[in-house]
Length: 192
Image (tube, rainbow, N blue to C red):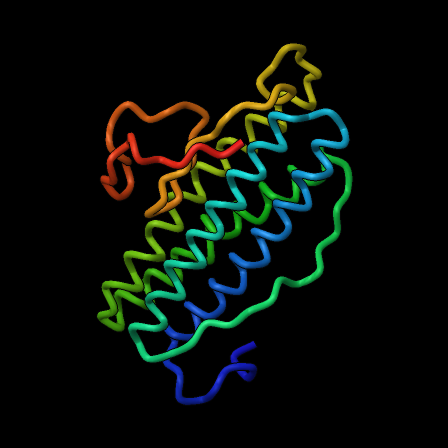
């Protein structure tokens, strides 16, 4: 994969470009998954996918901002995605988030820290921590859907709250400032 990037880019730039593309792809995938969930009558899960899509858009914006500060440009188009039923889409989303949490972002943080790029490291850290909130929500939705629990939040449309700075995502309006970046909780975006 590094051959696709100009040779003069350092590892942090390459990682930022890779993360940017990944977040653009995740956003498109989650919007497609939301449409499928709506069509199956899982309106709460559709709202969750839309909130996660907004979060991925915030991550991509943060990574593009850091790239611009480094004198680079971030351009990407979403890759095609496969949409299946909502159970499989949740499993796909959870697998992607797990990969980012366990492997991708920790290695990107390590490289940015080693390169003394604190701005990139912070952007990666925010993404890592927010991806954990997405994984928790996807896990909860998957467990409820597989258990066929009635009247669960997965069936009814409702708002999710996304921090516009780091993309931390929750089912309820946060009572305190964002636990990841400290942004005022009353400014969290409400996504349905």
